[in-house]
Structures are given as structure tokens and as C-alpha cells.
Amino acid sequence: MEGTQKDVVIVTGATGSMGAVATRKLAAEGKHVIMACRNTVKAEALRWEILKEQPEASLTILPLELSSPTSIQSFVRSLEGKRITALFCNAGIKAHRYMQNEEGYEMDFATNYLGNRLLTLLLLPLMPEGAHIVLMVSLTTKLARLDLRWKERGEREFGQLSTYGSSKLALLYFAIGLGRRHPGLHVNVSDPGVVNSNMITMGRWYDPLADLFFRPFIKTPAQGVQPALRALQSEHTLKYFVGNKVKNMPARFLHSPLVELLWKQADTLQQAYLTDKTSSTGK
Ligand SMILES: NC(=O)c1ccc[n+]([C@@H]2O[C@H](COP(=O)([O-])OP(=O)(O)OC[C@H]3O[C@@H](n4cnc5c(N)ncnc54)[C@H](OP(=O)(O)O)[C@@H]3O)[C@@H](O)[C@H]2O)c1
Image (cartoon, rainbow, N blue to C red):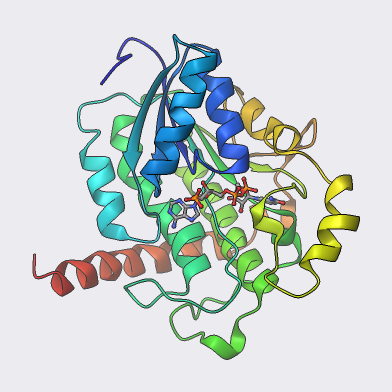
């Protein structure tokens, strides 16, 4: 891999609206960026675009499908022996309808929470003291309710915003648990606000109207990703980056018993998650 002397930053979902801005910016700062993407053709096109603008940019593309534990494990295996100085967990989805990953978990939950959690935990041995981890949360987190019956929740309980918000809330609780367990790392969350990207499409008849009357007034991806970029360089830990502010984690999240409850549940779940996959592939 190129750039082993440089800071190495992983950007998941580098092909997305905010991911592409972050990748450009981090490469321009001289960092080696690992573009962790599910669509490597799209990633290659972006890499070439950036190389045209910045011939010195140091970029590697590695395939990563966050809803798949197998893909996450092989992504991490391909980094063996590397030193990762920052991880930007940017990739995420807001599914338009109820879908499951191969292991039977609802897709938002599998991607935004279980996938990010597994990826981060598997990467920890490669991250030195002082490394940065930034997880993307959302405004919806503040309105969400956490329901720990993950696998039992079916189609009838699915709602685009409520399910998405719940998966991001679980991610926020994960960030708090992680920061507590690893005080030597800078673990922060970033809330980009409402940003003009594919993410805000609802897959409904009124999308064209929203595009006309709503999109022009919301943040651009370049604006939305700013708090995350600041968090990636911050000396703080366990902070909530939003707009141009660095806020404390809201006390109701920081002191919630759900942080530890969820951590324990997810440890068990993750074990089963990996075992399920291993047995179903016959390995
Ligand atoms: N837009 C907003 O208003 C908003 C608000 C709050 C939080 N956020 C969060 O900000 C982050 C970036 O969002 P965005 O607005 O830039 O959205 P976006 O343009 O849709 O980008 C999302 C990125 O995530 C990738 N991705 C989705 N599912 C994946 C999977 N299973 N495995 C690997 N990669 C996957 C997408 O890959 P493809 O390119 O292959 O589709 C894309 O690169 C997300 O975590 C989102 O939840 C966004």
C-alpha cells in the first residue's frame, strides 16, 4: 500500500456525498486515505477524479459492504499490519422499506449500528493511542426510541425515520461505551444536520416537491461534513460535533443505563452474528 509513512485515514462510504468531500479534503491535507466502499467501480471513478485535481493524492480503494460481517472481516484482514490513525465511519443508509441483511437483521440496524460497531472493534488493534474515531449520527437520534428487540422487530414496526433514528441512537450509545473503554482514543460523534444528498429521499410521490422547495435551503455536503472533519483532528473525546460547535454529549444519553445494557447485548449479539455467518457459509 502507498503512503505508509503518512497518517492513514479510513473513510467509509467515500463514494457518498459527504464521504467524497471528506476524501478530497483529507487527501489534500497529505493523508493516505483508504476509501472503504461497497461500489468499487464508483470509487475508482472518484479516485481518478481526485487524482486529476491532486496528482499527489494517496488513495487506496478497499471493498466494504457494511451490512455483511464477512465483508467487514475480510476488509479488516486486508489491513493486517497497518497503522490506522483515523477512522471516519461515514457510510450509512435510511432504507425506504423493510429489508434484511443475510443474517436476518433489519438493514438500517445491520448497516448503521451492527456494521459500524463490528468494523470499529475489529480495527482497534490497528489504532495507536491518540487515534481518532468519528461516527456519524443524526438529528433523528434525538427523537428516536431504542427498542432492544432487534431481530424480533418486523415489517409492521418499520418506519423510515424511526428505524433509521433508532439505529443511529444505538450507534451513539456505542460511541459512548467505546470512548469510556478506550480513553486513549478520541471517540466523537458528528451530526451533519439536514444535508442535500440521496439520504434524504423518501422514495415517495412528494420527493420532486421536496427537491424543489426543500433542497435549496438545506446544507450542502461540504457544509454538512465540516463538524466531522473537525472531529477527525480534535483533541476532545466523547463530544457531539454539530454545526461549528463542540457540545457535550447530551446528559440523557451519556448517563443512560442503555449504554451498558446495549454494549452487553451487542457483545452477545455480535458473537451470534459472526457465528451465524460462519456456520451458514460452512467455514
Ligand atoms: N444527508 C443527511 O441529511 C444526513 C443527516 C444526518 C446524518 N447523515 C449521515 O451521514 C452519513 C453520510 O450520508 P450522506 O448524506 O453523504 O449520504 P449518501 O450520499 O447517501 O452516502 C452514503 C454512503 O454510504 C454508503 N453505504 C450505504 N450503505 C452501505 C453499505 N451497506 N456498505 C457500505 N457502504 C454503504 C453509500 O455507498 P454507495 O455510494 O455505494 O451508495 C454512500 O457512499 C450517513 O451515515 C448518514 O446517515 C446524513
